[in-house]
Each structure stands twice: as structure tokens, then as C-alpha cells.
Length: 504
Image (cartoon, one colour):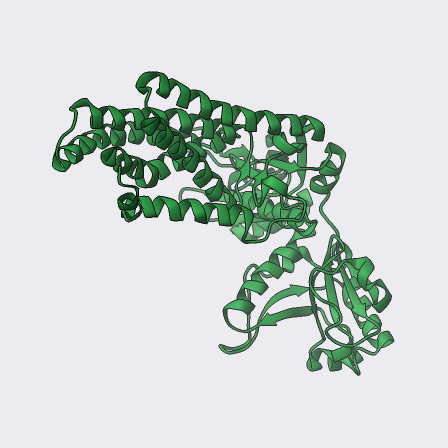
């Protein structure tokens, strides 16, 4: 076998470079935490490191309504009668409304009778009445919960939606009591004003205790900001003006802001008296009052505000993030925790250790079975290192996309090892079945083997796609890892192995 010739082959070079790149993203860049050890930049789910899971039900109602008044009047009437936010969605057949509160069909019918309205019928004759919320509200709730958890430094989270009224949250490394407290509460949004120091002393990411001595409390979001008033998209005054997030203060908030600005000198020296916004005691925005606003506050309270975030795309993206933060203090709908559970840290560590042992045991055992079949080191060693490189590539992919490895993901890796050795056996049998032949005949046999491999992999990938896109809980991790492993094998590791077999 000519090793030097193999090292010049593009397929071998591609495999080596991909494996090196995977090792780099796992252990070198970005730099892993100091205590990461062999884990590097790999993230693990709660079933491998311990943590908690919650099942949330979003409280709301989606209903079609027929009424003799306009849609906006129906929405306003229901908001007043039900004490809940009501959003009108234009329906094709009937007017559809989202009531951001759980309400019974009987209760809603009684309320609608006061304006001569009723619950509409679907084409099949059933009532247009469903428990839950719209997809947009579900996604907004998920996004807000995600922002809140990340702001608290809980990056090892996994949030999934099921249908239009359920959200599943996995939080690694957090006990069940803390998880309930974090997700079950709406969050705390606070505005503080700088009282000492100079402009720029307050930076995003600082905690409340770090700026306590140079700031003073102004108002909390729930009592000072109209949550419905937060703009859905970034705004700016003109084409080349800074982007910003607009919102409106309640009476109490506007008065508190004016009093604080006058007391601490922000109306006379706005540059050194910034307004800081904090979500769950973390600074998410800080900037001085505009000169115009500072002058206005000398005369009267200001209600409509815009937090400017900067120019061009960077400013636009910051404004989008700030809008989410402004909304993150209050979820659009109430959530009910209908299920919860916890995996203790020591048990997660046991699962993690066991999964690593299971993975390497599978690798060793399938290689041993192949050795019993061929009894040739020059065949078994390339097969072993091909399977090992495939595992490294899957882990590198997981590190790049910050995929959380859990027990189903480990099961997917083991499944990839099993299908991988099957495909390598097909290649090996085709190469050695006809004895020594010309290079053209070898390539013909390998092409035949790859025809079988492609057909087998395609059927498996199609089956796994069903699991990946049907939101079947943790089975998604198994499906995605299996699909990624098969694709990496088809396009990177199998061609390299076939080239080695041809050379042998």
C-alpha cells in the first residue's frame, strides 16, 4: 500500500481536514471554559448533567365570532368585559379573534349575547372555538422565555413547542424549584437613572448590584410601561436616523421619570445621567436622555419614548433585541405548569459516564465483529478509524451549532456506528470479491457499492425526517444525529474509506 499516494488523494485530504476542524471547534476555538476538561465546547442536556424540565400550557382562546358591529368594536368590547387582551385576525370565512385568557364557551356566549353576537361555525358545522393561542403568540412566548433564561446565564436550555398551546422547557443544571420560579414568573423589568460617575460607566450585561451605588430606582416595568405599547418593529425618524424601540409610559411611570430626572440633574446634564433598563437585574440598555426630552421633562412628564440603539443594520438588530427585552418582563399570555420533573446532578453524571462507555463499547464491538469476518488488520484498522472519525465529525457538528447532546443523541451516534459498519462492509466486500483487478474494475465495484449505500441511506433519512419535523419530544435529537451522521458518512468518510480499500 502506498501511504504517500493516499495522503495526496483529495478524498483523504478532505477527511483529515474535516476531522482537524472538528477537533478545533471542540477544543480550541472558541476557547472552552476553564473547567471543561474533555468536554471542550460540547453541550449536554439535562439527562446527562442533571437539571429540570417543565411542560407549559399557554392560556388562551382562539374563536370565530359573528356580530353586527365592526371587528375593532368587538375586540374592544371583549377586552373590557373579559379583562384580557383581545387581538383580531382577519379570517377567510369568519372574523377570528385571539383572547389571551382561558374562557369557557358558555361564558363567551353569554358575553357576546349582549351585543347580539355569537360564536361562528366552521364549514363542518362545529363551533369555531379552540383552547390555545395563535402560532405567532406561541412563538413570541417561546422567544421571551428563551431571552429571559439566557439573560440569567442559563445558556444550556432547550425550548420546544408542541401544537399551538404547549411549550416544553429543559434547563440543564437547575433544580426544579428554581426552574419553576424562573419560568413561571413573568420577570422583573426595571428602569434606573444614573446618579454618579460619568456617561459610559453603565454597560450592557452589568448586574444591578454592580451599579447600585451609581444609580437610583425609577420605576418597574409592570407599573410604569404599557406592555401593549411596545412597538413590534424597530422605528426611526428618517432614512439615515438611528433605529430605536418605541414604548409608552403609564401615568405613574411618566411622573416617576420626570421626578427622578429633575432630582438627579438629568434635565441639565443628560450625558452623565443615563437611563438604564434592567431585565431580571441585568442591564440590557443604557443611554442618556436626548436634549429634546431633557428640556420637555423640565415642563411636564413625557409619555411616548424611543430608546435609540444606533445606525444601519447593527442598530436595527439591537432595536429588535431591545423590543424583545421590553416585552420579556411580561409574557403575552399566562402560562400554567402542567408537568415537571428533575434529573439529579449525580444521576446525570452517571448517565453521561454510561453513555460514553456505551459509545466506545459499540465502536469496539462492531470492529471486533468485522475482524472475525475478515481477520485482516489492514482492513480492520481503516474501518475502525473511519468510524472513529465519523464520531468526531458528529461531535464537531454538535459543537458548531451548540446542539445539546442528550441520551437520544447518544443513541443516534450508536445507531450511526451500526449503519456505518454495515456500509463499510458493503464497500469492503465489493472491493475484495473479485480478487485483484484493474483500477477501472475497482471503481466500478465501488460505484455499485455506493449505489446500495445511497439507496439504504435515503430510506433511513426519509424515515428520520418524519421524527425530526413532527416535534416528537426528545426523539428529534435521535433523528437529527442519525441524519447528520449518514450525510457525513456518504460525502466524507465512505469515499475516503473506499479509496483506502482500493489502495489496499
